[in-house]
Image (cartoon, rainbow, N blue to C red):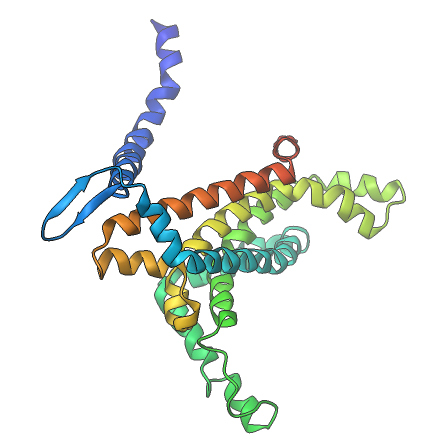
Amino acid sequence: MRRLRGALTPYLLMLPAGLWLLVFFAIPLVYMASVSLMTGNLIDGWKLTWHWQNYTEGLDVYGDKLLRSLWYGLIATVACIVLAYPAAYWIAFKGGRHKSTWLFLLLLPFFVSFVLRTISWKLVLTDNGPILGPLKSWGLLPDGFHVLDSGFAVISGLTYNFLPFMVLPIYVALERIDYRTIEAAYDLYAGRVEVFRRVVLPLSLPGVFAGVIMTFVPVTSDYVNAQVLGGPGNTMIGNVIQAEYFTNSNYHTASALSFTLMALLLIGIFAYARALGTKDVLEAAGR
């Protein structure tokens, strides 16, 4: 009896989380999959007719928005890596006893609403704001120069809002590195670049891997930044799905687009994991 109870204990501990995921993730996901294959309207009702054309029709109409979302997501994720890695490296190896303070300052913007943070970014980038206004008055920029309603503004907002999702996993991976390993590399006459390339970077790959997944998925599906910072020419697929659901009541199209986006994200993540070498990442994480 005691052995049986010990064997069941892990599953019983997982039961609450499993039920939570079943009720609020698996069941809605299955229902939304059925909606993506329905036909009908609000007046006549909806029927499950296995109408696979909802997927092809959605791609024909909104394929450019989907590609733009993937492109913006890729650029923002790369920008997050470029900005996050040096910050995480400095906090992990140079932060000293103030590491917690620096991490708190990094997370401090998260205490403010996501929408408010995006609107504040809009106020900063406005034509006569605190950055462009003085530059125009000094003659460094032409009067007609603007940043808002552009792809650059959307990508900047995405990078700003999701940067901590990249910093924290990389910091955790760097923090786990035994500094004696780095000292041993120096003792073997390796230079700073060689130590970073052959010791620090491989051991931090699990953090980069986790950071890319945590950043690329929400960045690509985001619609707030495109709506607040972008113009009509910068619409992302998240804006389309939101409009089809809540404005046009085209639930089947919105569901089909949602699953198409999810499938493309999964394919991209698996390809990224294969290119990076999941086995090598897991081995590095276990050290």
